[in-house]
Length: 460
Image (cartoon, rainbow, N blue to C red; front, side, top):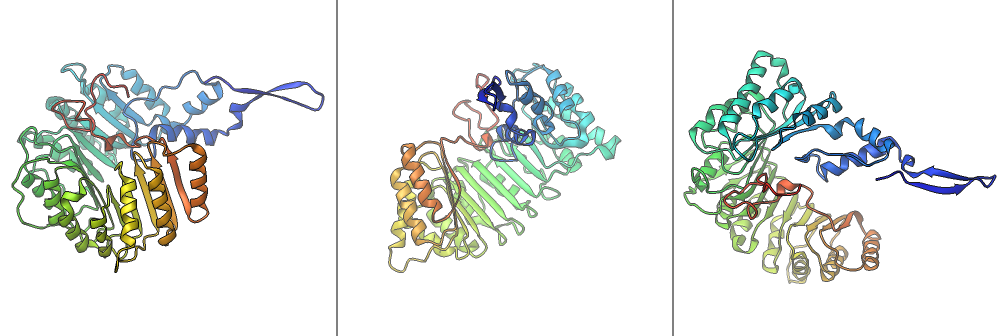
């Protein structure tokens, strides 16, 4: 972006060039630059470095002096270690998000060399993501980290999140993964690719657990394996299961009691496994529940789950509501936030909710907030949403869609209609997925099911 100028006039009539770029204060530009790489969620930072070029000197100076912009130290299939050193020098005293990925080809570059570069900044590590496909390399890296923490206890970071990608299921994986977890004591643990070994203990430190893209891959983990893991997570406050096992039996008729669980997200994967999880999980403190899967085939276990937790649930986000499944609202007397997420059939769900309100003896809908995050929404869906706003005591509304439903004049008119009646927190169209970790790239990489398994030819 080149420097933008505009021509104006002063009292004596002489033209003056005004630098429009400099009208934005540095603190505002810093916030803009930070918002671009992080998307809509503070939890995510890009896996590739940000390269800033062809901008005016004023903007460039602000970017270079915004330390948080350079706080993601990434090694991803590149021998250019000087880039990481440059990022470290531009983010002094900042908390760091460290991503250690080996090359896609064996022997491409030593991961231990990458670790050596960032180890001096170990106390500043906020998150650590480790590529675990090459166990020899990952064990060497974890050994280096643990050795440094043992030699200098004051160097041990206060990790917000520790992520292992494509962790194997054999016993040899335990040798370093468990000691590393015990040493670093992360607040949150994430496993992407396959299930961790059942011998790993999750109940000691982590309060948040995410299991992404679980497959029947190496070691062929079964649903009973997943059940054993969940039964050991008695201290969890939040749990995310994304693309859980698509096949495999062995789920025992036992309850999985999670007394401290407040947030639970279940997304994609096997309907059979999802039904087993819904029947088994008992979370008396559950506050927020999100489910994004084929709702119609798990109606009964979903209804049972909501009835068991209905008095505690305040937030429900679901991919689709049918007329015959809208009765679930009767089990949620204290619901405050209702969301429709992910589905392209939001209009059908909204229409079903409107029809539900006309049913005899239908329970009144009392939630105060509606959140919609979808791929598409139709004009009919917007009209159904207007009907809901008129019939339910809604206070706030958020609508985000990846495509536009009508021309801009109609969208502005609809937005004005809603703003006259409720607080509109978001009215955004043509938006993209805010967190790539919510996506599944299995269709691009045969045989691999992990949100981090990008094809080598992908443009990021």
